[in-house]
Image (tube, rainbow, N blue to C red; front, top):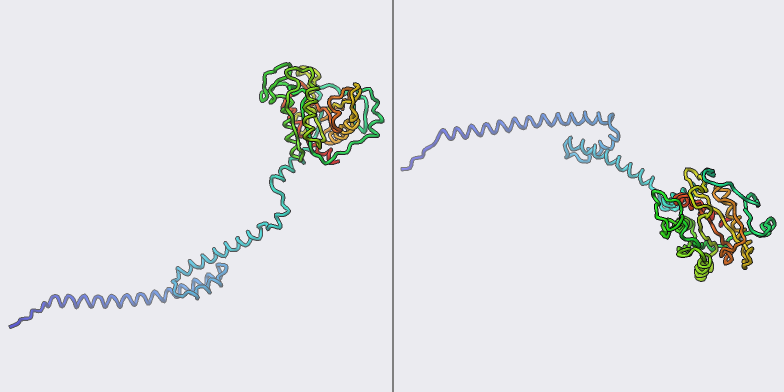
Length: 378
């Protein structure tokens, strides 16, 4: 005999749980339906506001209809992203329009060339004034087209310059050398040195040789090809310096026959103290004055080129007097030959004197280089 035991308590319990679940489900459905209606109303209200408050609302509203499966929060976020993207695209278009094309760049100079060009132009826009302190009065015997010449030769040059004129070639090759390589200047804090003799030293970092380096560097900026010799000619013996420098110059010319301008760079030997410092102020700089010394055949040595050399010096100095009045002292014309018989544009250039500093002499070289550059263009 089988007996079935029914647990009434459990049955009642399960029925109760079932009814609770059903009632809860019905309540949830009612709440969701109500929220859906409210969300639709909120959506319509928000869109109407956006039409009047935000730009580009019409486009954004069309985007809402294209993706109806997204809820309202997602759609608003999409709208803000769309506005942001359109702003970015507009900035990119403007940037592209402002960017120079290759054709535009064809007429734009590189920044280095612009800076260099500006620097060179600034060299010609400076006030120049001769400094009288520690200087001596100018001495000259002749004036040719306002060019002052101190004629110490045996020649009457009044008619010579009328019949001789110098025309530059296209060589652009310059030789710089030093008959008196050890000539130096008044020591300074930056250029302090031990003198081998009175205002002389074998350390070429403090002599006219250093000035020659500066002139070479400045000339090269204008396209000159410079050969700079720093061979000693006045050490250990000062006597015979010009004979030794003649050999050096001849050897250089053997390999550079097309060289046109030859400069024997010196320091003025007048005086042996700091009491003589011929200077000129160009802009804010104090620069050492410079001077042409031109030789002739007055000593009896063969020198057919001296008239051309003098004409060359006059041409260069006319440019110097135009750009920097007082930078060049009067040209000196002498009877000695000074090795200038080898070419037709050969001179001595004396830079400063014992009282000048190396800084002042170095400062002069950019102006001397500009003068030579301008002279070769005429």
